[in-house]
Image 1 (cartoon, helix red, strand yellow):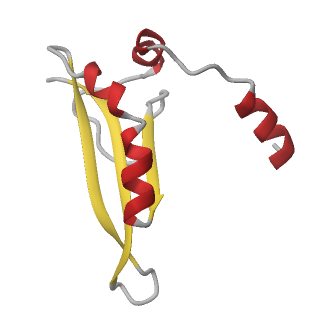
Image 2: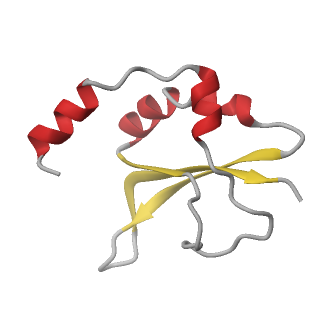
Length: 102
């Protein structure tokens, strides 16, 4: 999708209600391992400098309400590595998903 089309698409979206947000997530099955799975799984990845990651993560607070007796929130925040040197950078990666309890 071209940037112009993507921005138009984004501008036409309504902010989801908490109910719509809950219903949009597809939890990872219990025992899930790896980065791919043959079904839709909802994952969020945010990368960037600490201020950006923290600011955008604040928009995701309603997702915390998805934690319950059947699902748990998986969240991982880690510093990123330089691919060539393997050294840690000043940037971070935040991974967030909903998983079935097991």
